[in-house]
Image 1 (cartoon, rainbow, N blue to C red):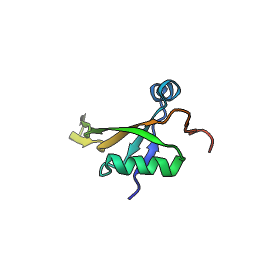
Image 2: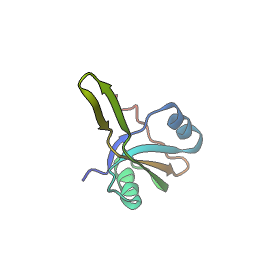
Image 3: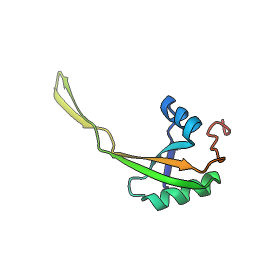
Image 4: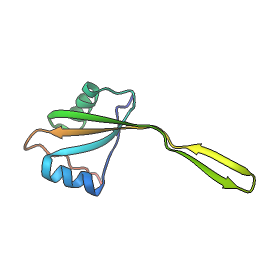
Length: 96
């Protein structure tokens, strides 16, 4: 099971990383906080102080078409906000 799916790279998370040493990740919905902490420390070589998680349910949508009503939904996701120790940084742009 891969714990980390991908980092969250938005304006808000970039500002948080610069000001508070706080980084966001999309993670596996079955992963707990200890597994997320170990995965971030192993992948990026930093020491994690705090992990906060958020579960988002699927967004349901309906579309009206010629053939009738189409129902659909997006996937459920889990986000993790990771606080890194003072002096440690994660550079997401180094591998581009």
